[in-house]
Image (cartoon, rainbow, N blue to C red):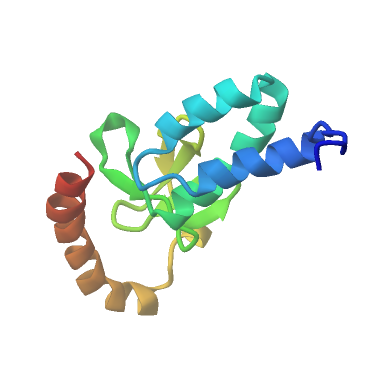
Length: 146
């Protein structure tokens, strides 16, 4: 084994390893892990590619809650509320939030278009779910994440 040549990792391998560490960050710790991964990779282009793929997946799988600008409320970043790209619907406030996944902040918010809103049948049954989600979000998740 000592006679075998050690080969350098390819760029794709480095990106895949960086993504693995980012995606497997403990809940709420991805920013700290990202700092370490960026230092280890030591290549901004490779890091940005890994981060741009990993952060959206991490944010959606952990269903992070982000404050919308203007004090409108919070939006949950989930695959269920994802409209396209970095836009997420908050059906409670009928707004669409634009999310910067890497910084984990809402950069913009606008009223939702009619075609982006759920139809009335779904809305009727989602009221109870929304109320319970707000209770969990305001009491449970906030205390656990601090």
